[in-house]
Amino acid sequence: MLKEGTMAPDFTLPDQNGQSRSLKDYRGQRVILYFYPKDLTAGCTAQACGFAQLYPQLREKGAVVLGVSKDSVASHKRFEEKYGLPFPLLSDPELSVIKAYDVLGEKKSFGKVSMGIVRTTYLIDANGVIEKALGKVKASENPAQMLEAIE
Image 1 (cartoon, helix red, strand yellow):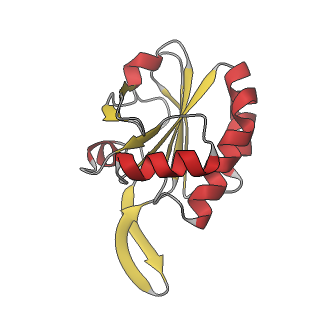
Image 2 (image 1 turned 180 degrees about the vertical axis):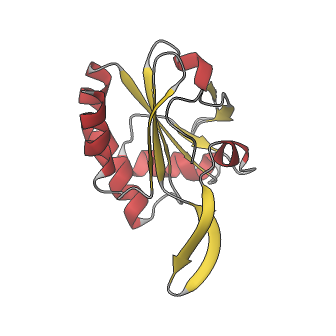
C-alpha cells in the first residue's frame, strides 16, 4: 500500500463506457480511488452501492469516486447498469494501476492462498497527493468511512 503524503501515481484507464479516464483530469478535486476484487460479487456490490448512495453527499463536498478492478469494460458496464452506479468503474486487466498502487497481494479464501486485489481505498487531495490510505477495508463500512474522512 502506498503511504499517505506521497504523490499518487497518474494513470489512464478505460471506464465502463470505454472512455479514457486519467487521474490528472480530476486535479482540483478530491478523489476517492477504491480498488475492489470483482464486479457483481456480494462484498463489491455492497461497497459500490454504498458509494452510490452517498455519492450526492461526496460530490457536495467536492469529491469524486473512481472504482478500479481487473474486470473488463463490458463487465463494468453490466455492474453499472444493474445497480445504477453514478461514478466511473475503471478496467485494469493488465494490472498496471493495481500494481502501481500496491494493492495486489496474498488472499486467503476457504484455506486456499492466491494472489488478488486487496480491497484498498485512497483519498487523494486536489493536488494529487495521497491524503488517506486504507487497506483491507470492510466493503460495507468503507463508503461511510470515506464520507467521514472528507468532512
